[in-house]
Image (tube, rainbow, N blue to C red; front, side):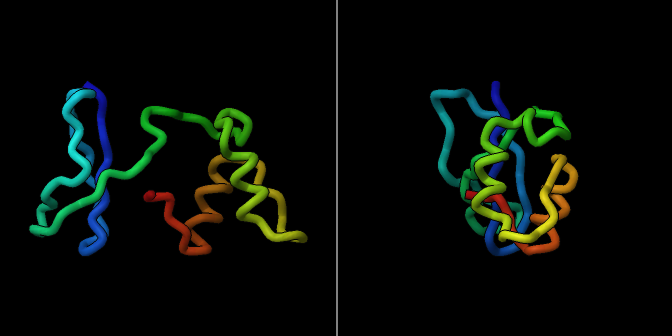
Length: 90
């Protein structure tokens, strides 16, 4: 069974749950009692090159402003997102 991720906007936690492909709820109950929304996530991908993830170079063109130091690795991308307060949570 695949792992699906859910994000709670109240307590800011991300929850991983196993579900059958044909029974994936859009929302689940979080430990805080609120509903957590299913988010799009990368899953089991482990890469540090921006070229290992097909969508990342085009995302960088949208995210980065002219004159900013080019992001050259996945680690730099994650640090950039954290510094700017940007979350990829759908």
